[in-house]
Image 1: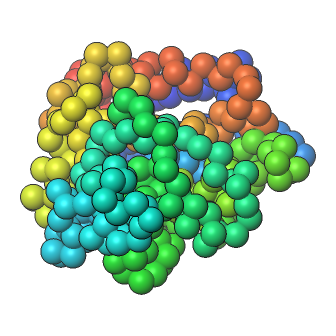
Image 2: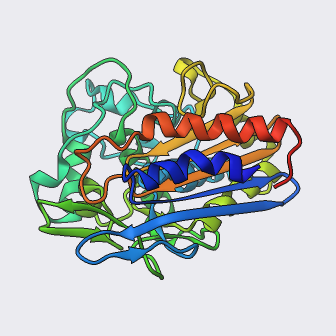
Image 3: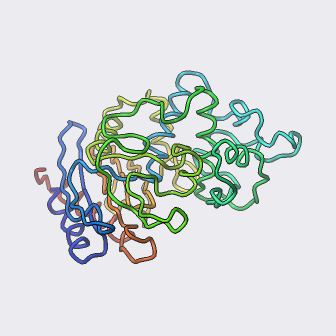
Length: 337
């Protein structure tokens, strides 16, 4: 089954659209398979990709780390998803307590990206001290707009976790093969960063995550293909969260979103063959994870498509659904792993 799904990935590597990639699948029964090809780095030196290389997971950090952290704190009764963030961050927009719209945002609002906050902001351009930049995020009067997928939502959730636990997100226990950077093993290269003046390899690609200290809630997590599959296996087995918190993940809300995740819809990145009981998420560096609960199947496609630059057509938008559709076609045909 995985060989059929890996064919478009191998073709993309062979054509030079992406340097390297790893594809893995896992079933609810615990069976798994992995394929990989290509290069972990092209510059400054060529390095072949191996199964043990760590990928910068980018926004997969939101669903593999931050979302479970928030839901576990809710499970423990330490926060209420429908209460405002100010329960954990009382100083949010503290100079306009009566009128600041930010003070009315709830944990659920941020998890489901239903706030007025912008998609992204070049926070790293406002200074170099992580504590000062966190204060900037909390006190800034954010421009209002329609609900969009927003990194700011998860930066705020990361700050809330830090306040509630008294520790950075990097102290939170994660599964084997998952770690906030720098990773404890060889890492794939991402982009040549003009701001930092070097190719990012073992350093977080996202500029704001780097400036905020490396583990701010929206990005910063690294993982091996087996580490990501281990997370998917735990989700499929119900071992990660209580049934009530799993329902928050699996229940669709506005704009095809649940808490943290996207739900399957026509034209989404997971492909058209997914069951309605499928959740997924992608990362800017070229990563993605999908879990089809109806089929008991999870798969991850990890690439370094931004290496050495994001300003190239990697074809990742077409590759992701092609992989999902090929994999599910083989699964439904009862082909073996």
